[in-house]
Structure formats: C-alpha cells, structure tokens
Image (spheres, rainbow, N blue to C red):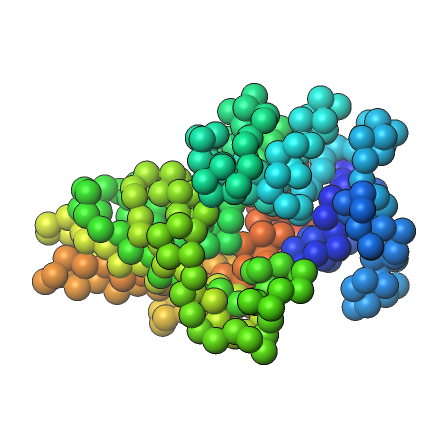
Length: 341
C-alpha cells in the first residue's frame, strides 16, 4: 500500500510515520504539512531528530495542485490534521480512488448538526460523512475492510468504548441509568503547538470542558447510551485512562461480566484483560489497551478502567490497525513484536 501522511509534523503524525517506516506492507510516498506551515520543505528528521537516518523525507506543502499531481500514485492517505481540514479535503482523494484514514474528528459524528457545537465548523461534505465508517478496529472489522473512508476514533472514546461495548452489547447495563466516564490524559493530547494552558509547567491535575467535551457525543453515539464524560488534564507527557461507573441489570453477576469481556476480546491481542487495575506506564509507547473491572453484586454496580497510549491506540496505531484490515492483514500486523507476517 502506497501512502501519504498529511499533517506529519505533529505528535500524532510523527508516531504514525514511525509505525509506517517499520511496516513491511506499506510505504510512505509523501509527507505533507499545511500550505502555510513553517515546516514545509524541512526534512522530517530535522523536525523530529530521533528519525535521523530512518526517515529523512522532506515535508511538502499541501495544495490542490499537489493532489492533482500526486494522488493517482497513492492507495491511501492518512490525515493527522485539524478536524475542518480533513472534512474539506477528504473528498478530493476519494474522487481519485484513494482510501482516506482520518485521525481527526472530521467524520466521527454522524449528525452533521453536531459539528458547529462540538467542532466549531459547518460540515460541507455530507455525502462523505454518510459513508464514513467508524474505525474502532476490534468492533468494526467487517465494515472497515470494505470502506473507502475511515473515521479513526478519538483517544478518550477508544478507551471508553473498549470498556463499555462488551457490557452494552450483552444487555447487562440497566436501561436509562447513569453512565459516568471519568478520563485523565497527559499533555500530548493537546497537540504539539505551544499553548500556555497545556504547558507542562502550568498544568496541574484539573477537570476541563465538563459537560461540553467533543468526545461525549462520540462516546454516546458509538456506545448506544448517553454518558456523562468528565475529562481531566494531568501533568505527564502521554497516556490516557478512563474509569467508568454504571448500573447493571438486576441479577447480573461478576461471572457474566467476566464472560462478556473475555468473549469480546479473546481474539484481540491488542486488548489485554489484566488481573489488576491498569497503569499508564504499562501502555505508554505501545499499541495496547489494558482493561480491568470490578463488580459489586449487592449494589449491582460495575466499575471498569481502560488505559491506552493516547498517541498510539488513541490515534496512530489504531489508524494502522484499520489500514491492516483494509489490506486483509490481522489488525495487529506490524504493531506487536514478532507479529509481522
């Protein structure tokens, strides 16, 4: 698969390039940045020195003219860009027969009316939006395999949905009861651009965007239940944890909950069901999602936690999982040590 990465200068773009340079079935043909970016015409390894000698490809300025000149030589394009950018440009690649894997929020929400409220722009490409497949690799493999446009899930929704879906799909949750998702993320989730509010020296553990975070409708949409989402920013670099509290149906046992998770993920090596509560350090710099849960049968309450790396399973490695599925490969191909054939 011949691919291009648009938005290769950011944190997620860099992680994606790192994964693609090691992938035996994909080759990076082009790395692009926005037309006015200061990184245009700079070698990728100059911007990210750890890639010196690994990926010295120059970053090229994106434009409509570039698409006309180069898109025919591509099989797929990854967007690691602002949300509105991918929403504006995905159709141009689709028209050339290039598959689009969008790591932004440009196609995650099915209701176009949600975009002004949560993403602050009017979605103009309703045709593409209606065709987009949500790229939660462990749950939508069949749809991803035949889609031309994949909306790669957000980081908080990835962890939340991996924790929630086995319970919801097995009808173990009490209908219309409160589902509370508490999330904590490191500062890399805010992107590479300097911002005083997310500067490491300024950050203390704090809630933010309570009852209005853009990932709340995404989690609710894909879980099929309304959730209360409480995100927090923490003073560490990378990694993300969600802890979810919900009410179970009367009579649901720990054994049933165990069975739901084990059945859901027994063939998913990326999702690890751990015997203890997960830790950020155990998933940072990896594609894994670690899950652990506890049931109070007397109160009929489930508490479940999921930890992921926000830049990898929450973005770049999940995009590669989706591309693997499109190629007919196991989704974990090239992501887990030794799993490259």
